[in-house]
Length: 430
RNA sequence: GUGGGCGUAGCUCAGUUGGCAGAGCGCUAGGUUGUGGUCCUGGAGGUCGCGGGUUCGAGCCCCGUCGCUCACCCCA
Image (tube, rainbow, N blue to C red; front, side, top):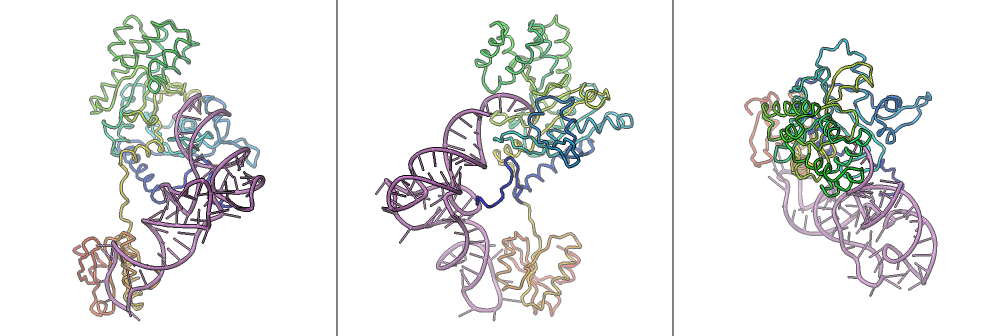
């Protein structure tokens, strides 16, 4: 506010205790799910050689990198995504790691672009990946983990839905409609906007791309078509059959695993990143007001391109910004946990030494203990105890001390009882 | 990169035709010295984003600028 103050950078966040608590809430939920699916956590450096992103990765990212030349003259960049680092790490130990590799990470990622709702210049993202397995069960497993990462935070099938498709399915359908390969990217781009802008706007885009009205109608029907519809419609096209079989296998595994209400086939789904080779999916809040909360898919060629090891892989990224917006909208942010259990109060300064001794004993037992850092009237100390959210106040005065006891006030009920110092120290019958 | 909206206390915001800078919440200190929450009283805290212009006088009008925000582009 004051111009003399140095403000935080645009698009970067300060985490005040309240916000940090939410962040921790999300991270610990993600870690629980990662552990539950047998994934190991890893991390890499937030600063990487610029080459890692410019050489082989998708060109889209490069224009939005935070990059500079370091003091040694090396071009470096803050990581905009985790996959290149992941690929390098996998490649360096590829032959030593038992497959399939199941790893997850919660990196902070950086991108230089204009901030807006649900998108900043920095965010944290849960990345989960499986390497070394082509079976569709791996695809179902990674999608299930993504859904559970959200369920763990209180979201259920009434809030979210996973849209699932297959990159090759859409390619095969475009080929079957005799759309030249050069036009695919444009058509992908148009279909990507379908959810947001509605069929009429997309029809205009498709026809601008040179598609006739019949073909446009067929493509627009993808959004509502079932896998069976497509299999019937393109029964003579092998590419469609193979991809359709794969998608329905993935979905049937998810249904068997109890995720049926969370998943929906959506043939019009397109993921922006070009490196996906098979299953693609996105998880959306049902109303569609926010952007996707999670996206991922299979990228069987990417590790070869980036790291030189030819291993099939798949994974997803789930950002914290949109997710936290969603949790707030749905009132799923937990209230602050009790910070303090015991608040120690001295009636006179003479009780300080025994109070410190008691504090130490209680803290040794893992209790959260605090007290006034300067001597004040008992009323003030109780006020402070209340403000600190203490569960109980332990009052030490000359009278009690002479008898080896303390007055313990339950801050919720207001009830006061006497406890011996010995039992407080040991934590007996509480 | 393009276009809209908004900048007044830590937060949410009032501020009339241009005439002494405000409220609520929060913070803090008291309400006679061994018992919190409620209540009462006081206090701190603002170059009205910044710079220029118009005017006797600008939070208010004009110009510029910076910041925030939403959308587009693109994408996570």
